[in-house]
Image 1 (cartoon, protein in one colour):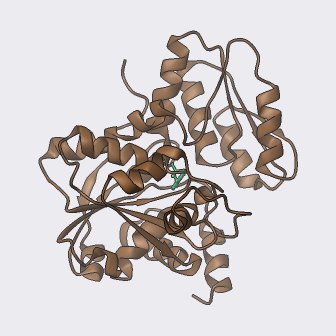
Image 2 (image 1 turned 90 degrees about the horizontal axis):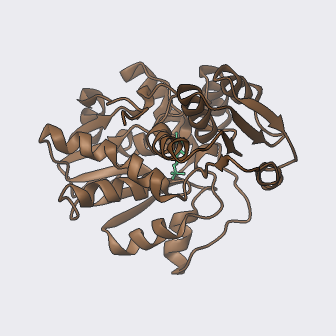
Image 3 (image 1 turned 135 degrees about the vertical axis):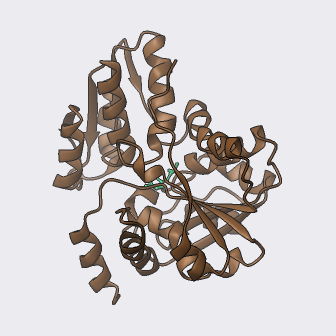
Length: 308
Ligand SMILES: *Cc1c(COP(=O)(O)O)cnc(C)c1O
């Protein structure tokens, strides 16, 4: 079956290489049609569920996972229902409706929206989890398959971590291409640092809430597989500030003419700040995970809020 995602460019970034003082290559997942890497995994899962007879897809993500489900459903000719909390921005709701999804607003936070989404599940409905699903990881891993096919081998891969689905997919991709020794630099923002806190505590921590503007990293707890990989694979955990992530988004907009969310800016910030975590590596691959929900206006407002 032809996948729903596209093969994205792998480019060497002159501006980011200059800032980081090493070769920085970019896997441009921001260019996936719904704006983020999520289509790789979600598309993979939706195709599988459709083949097994799913008549409708249900999601409780008002962010890029929901947008990817809406896109996949439209491509596969299946209706999509997304239940989002009242806190979801008009911009995000508009993006979901633009992909022809039915948007139901329910409850003050994701917990209530998710519970309502579960209650709507009928026979023939498939629920798409945003990060904790093996089909998703298998789909995300294809971005590493594409890099491996070019013959260029990174010394390390930088990924942003929310619930850890992207990280699981990248580790799976490294392993299945014979690159199990290539380290992963796992980046979060303060206030959404559920992996860093779990590693420090030695067990999976559940954050009391999310305080970062990088809402796409806002999983209160990483999935069990991501926590296992943090021990089983060479993983370096890094936490950056919201201000650093937002500045990186604005820098990237100037340097590469692509607008990404702070969730992605967190990874880019490592190169812009010549972060110590990159010190051991000559050739770094940054997954430009993207994100469709930020605008120039929101980035600028956050920038002045953080004194950028
Ligand atoms: C979902 C998302 C992430 C985090 O991915 P996880 O699989 O939840 O770790 C990072 N960046 C963007 C833009 C996202 O949409």
